Image (cartoon, rainbow, N blue to C red):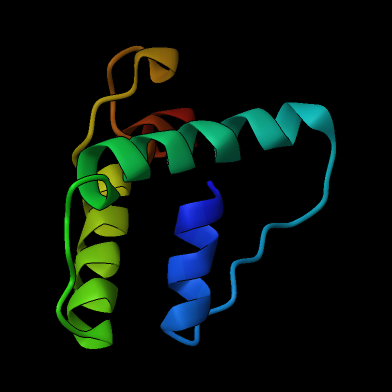
Length: 84
């Protein structure tokens, strides 16, 4: 986690997360665990633009395509559209 924060600082980025309740934090922790495991670890980004592009693509994938066991193996977008 410290290396990740250091890299963000080196790129001039600021990490932030909303301070809510413990139940909200579990979802954020899960997201960042997946992000680090699936994108960050072992990847060297040559430029800030490359990092931003990869993060943007991952967030899109995470919300629209990635299946989540906690949501009955649906993407968050599909889950929300069924719940509405």
